[in-house]
Length: 77
Image (cartoon, rainbow, N blue to C red; front, side):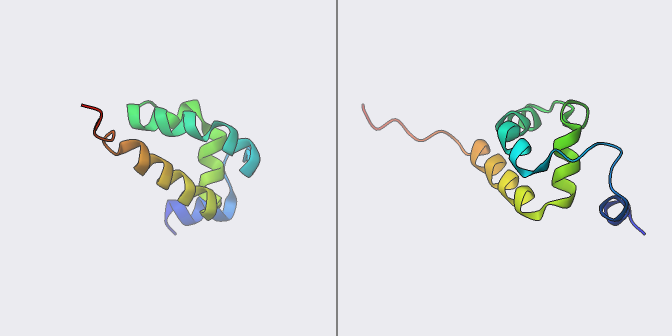
């Protein structure tokens, strides 16, 4: 059995923060992830929730993708 499946079946040592609580800090999590910070240490409850919630994981992936996009060109010149 792989680690991902084991984690989804048995849970994590960290308490799942739930969708609402995770949503409140999702931007902080995504920005920390992009900066290369240790998000597993900083946001263990978010990690636990994302492991089991497909909807939140997809939202997070979309947020991260949008944060990685280059800023729009300045057309005011």
